[in-house]
Image (cartoon, rainbow, N blue to C red; front, side, top):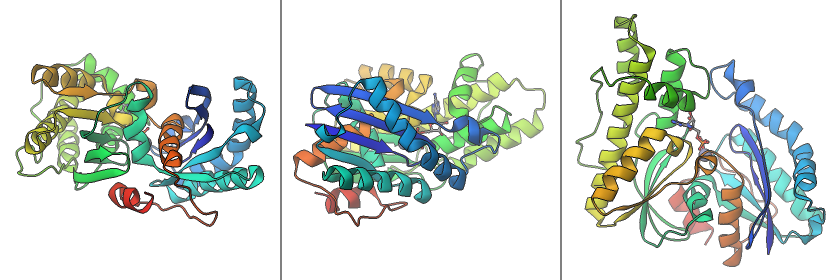
Length: 335
Ligand code: KG4
Ligand code: ZN
């Protein structure tokens, strides 16, 4: 069984050809440089770029993989939700067009479901497990009890953690996306400044990052001579502390000893280090995808699409993308 998968929910145009035996071909075009001058993703520009690039990218995928018989594709997997609506429209329209042309079904995937299953491309996680999804748009905790069986445990009440990284990086003049640069810079600094850890001790599994961002802003204003490396390090320590504390609480509350960390921010070196070291001491198994699969890609969409197709689930040709359908709801609808 072979699927062609497409992901266009934000600023990456990604395609992949995937079979049950493994990856046939995989291609990704990042628009990050284009958006960096604006300090963040410009939705209209993102959709235009996807439209311009998606067909040439399919040609490149076919030639680089040496896979020329598109009619051997059994179904097309695509990101239906959540994401920038204009960008999603491009990927969904592409999936419909290819499906119509090949007379093959189309299979919807939730972007966060894709992230959750990114780990499975290397190693399957036994159910149940807790998943922390940390990306540019989300900071969510889920209990995953099976494919499509997701329970929302808590999430951010304001900014997503990736968004906070990008905003703090922008305050430090580091460009967009700021996460990877800030991460590298933090490694060279010291945790010199005591920054707040909002909601660290709250009696729930929710997060809040806007207060931390404001505290960094104040710190920069009041300490013009402070080293950027030290500010980055103090911010990163606060973020990792908060994420670790909430996951630890979820593990205790639910009595589930397996946790995955997925999404763009799971590429963070300090987060990987702390989660792996601290949880292994407690006998908790930690699963984190390789860096290449942490950030947006089409492979994770292909993998989740394959699981859904095997359950006989396909979408009608008049399906429309949704900017923000909750994962829990999606899991119930497409089951
Ligand atoms: O999952 P993703 O590629 O796209 C969304 O679905 O949002 O996540 C992108 C986010 C960006 O905010 C980026 O700054 C952040 O992930 N990110 C990182 C790192 N690499 C990417 N944040 C912290 N440390 C990193 N190494
Ligand atoms: Zn993502």
